[in-house]
Amino acid sequence: MTELDELYQEVILEHSKAPRNYRRPEATNRSAEGYNPLCGDRFTVFLDMEGDAIRDIGFQGSGCAISRASASMMTQSLKGKSKKEAARLFEEFHRLVTGHAETPEERTKLGKLAAFAGVSKFPVRVKCATLAWHTMQSALEGKQNPVSTE
Ligand code: ZN
Image (cartoon, rainbow, N blue to C red):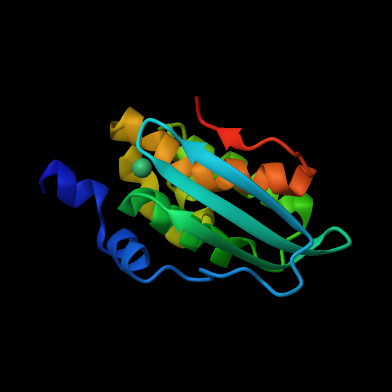
């Protein structure tokens, strides 16, 4: 496989072409903006929180294939999750894309998100893959300032 094949696995390509939850949920009660100046990725993540649970989540904006696919798959993974579960999943995803998820069990736990394992070989792309997640975390915490990866 070429480097590009490894990086842009099929599932990533598919999500980047047809992002899921690319919308602002009607009942959005939290949102945050995120920007990755290295690549130009810029997203807003919208949350519809019911107490401690993510009842609905969506995003809008523009970015490279990796950042779009990551945002799309993140929204699918987080719908219905609690704040704590979302934080834990981000932690596990972060370990994966930075090359620290070494055991097969760790990867299996991440399900489809494991497609991003190849990103760990491209340090510049780690910011693309985690931008939506950082932005989601900021929205969860109700922060006012836009997130920047720099
Ligand atoms: Zn990017």
